[in-house]
Each structure stands twice: as structure tokens, then as C-alpha cells.
Image (cartoon, rainbow, N blue to C red; front, side, top):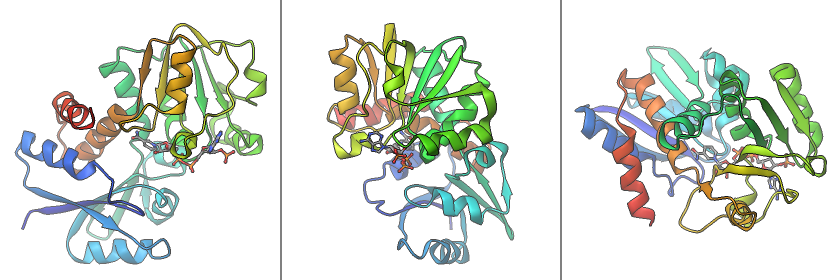
Length: 271
Ligand code: NDP
């Protein structure tokens, strides 16, 4: 019986994680099985326990369970503690280890795949939900010139200052007018609803990079806005998805898969 893994969420049918991990396993010669696990929104713990009882070794966690996974994990990585959200669970005996690989996924995609370093650059992060929280610490570790976080509900963003300290600046959207950034990361769920966060014109510095964490066939409103602002470097979050999966694979199997061919495969499939 191969070792069992899965991505747990609701909904989860759309997830590309099984395809990604199947490629990683094939590439590294690992004998494992990776499925989709749909959990009722009020039965996350029960679904995890049943998976574990069947011999499950680890889970990727997606919407809306990253907070519950954080509370479930008995042992947490530092980055999961900072994010207060867990996207990777590893089961060893009775122990449950929780980690958050989203931030490493974003930084690896930016730096390795896109040649877009964070160090010394002015970075604007949009959103203050689970995805934004997960990437703040890994972005700060790269020592950007500035890391400014803008959120529609300002109070929610201000709470993050208590966790991440003075390295992080908080701003209302309107207060961004007249400022320029080398990298703007959309970590809001606005694109999911076909909406654009209320960004002022002129927010991209010349030669700037636009990054939308959402991915899919169609251009997102955020990337369309960047295009209308003359931004040439525009990318969705497919690379982040593959890179965060690679970090999870390493946590479970101790091996670093080659992400480039897997990302190429997914890009071809969504072209
Ligand atoms: P959450 O629901 O936790 O947070 C949503 C955030 O979006 C909040 O800050 C909310 O602001 C903001 N928001 C929603 N609508 C608007 C709007 N119209 N204008 C401005 N702000 C808005 O979601 P997550 O953080 O979990 O996910 C965010 C996105 O990141 C999703 O699209 C998800 O698919 C993507 N993602 C991609 C990953 C990848 O690997 N590529 C990994 C993880 C996430 P407010 O606080 O005011 O409500």
C-alpha cells in the first residue's frame, strides 16, 4: 500500500494538487498516492481523523480550513505560527506537525522562476486574509526596501502589525496615491469575484512586476489593470501553487522535486 496524502478543502474538485504531486512522485520515484478530500465545512477534524485512521501520512489544506488546521497542529513551524494558518499537515505516530509553505512558494516563484528578487525592492501586498498573512514573514526575510500592506478593512491589517512588527507598513488603498512599487502582489480574493481592489493609477514603478496569486485561463481584473497601466511583467499564481507544493513534498518526503517541468506542463494545460 503506497503512502497516502491528499488535499483537503471545500470545494476541492478544482484542485491541481493531485496532478502536481503525481508528477513530483513520478520524477523522484516515490511510491505514494495523492487524492482530493472533500470535507463538510463543519466536519474538518472528523474528516482528518478518518483519513489518518486509514493510514494517511499528510495533507495539504486549502480554503476554508487553514485556520482550523492551525489550531489542530500540535507542533507548528515558526512560519505557520506567524501566519496563524497551516497549509501542510504531516502525521507521525500521534504527532501532528503543521507548516505553511505559501510564502516560500511565492518567494521561490518570484526569485527562481521569474528572476524577480524581493531584496531591496519596494513591495506592495494587497489583502490581509490567510494568503497575505502566510507570505509576510518570508517576504520580510528577503529584506525588501519596503513592505506595505493595503487592505479594504484597515483594522484587520492593523492587527498584523502586532504580529510582524515595524518591518511591515500598513496603508489604506486611498493613501497609496502618489506612491510607486517595484512589485505589487494581489493576495486578495477580489479576482475570484471578478473585481479589482481599489488601487490608484500610477502605483507601479517603471519596470515593475504585477503578481496575482489567483490563477486560471482568463486574465484577472488585477492583471488587466496592470496591463492598462503599461506593466509588461504580469503573472498569475500558478508558479506559487507549484512551488508551495514542492515545499510540502519536501516536508513529507525529504526530497526537492524539479518544479520547472511541472509548471510547464500546467501552463500548457491552461493555455
Ligand atoms: P481570504 O478570504 O482569507 O482573504 C480575502 C482578502 O481579500 C481579504 O483581505 C479581503 O479584504 C480581500 N478582498 C476580497 N474582496 C475584495 C475586493 N473586492 N477589494 C479589495 N479587497 C478584497 O482569502 P485567502 O487569503 O485565503 O486567498 C486570497 C487569494 O489568494 C485567493 O484568490 C486564493 O485563490 C489565492 N491563493 C493562491 C495560492 C497559490 O498557491 N497561488 C495560495 C493561497 C491563496 P477584507 O479584509 O476587507 O474583507
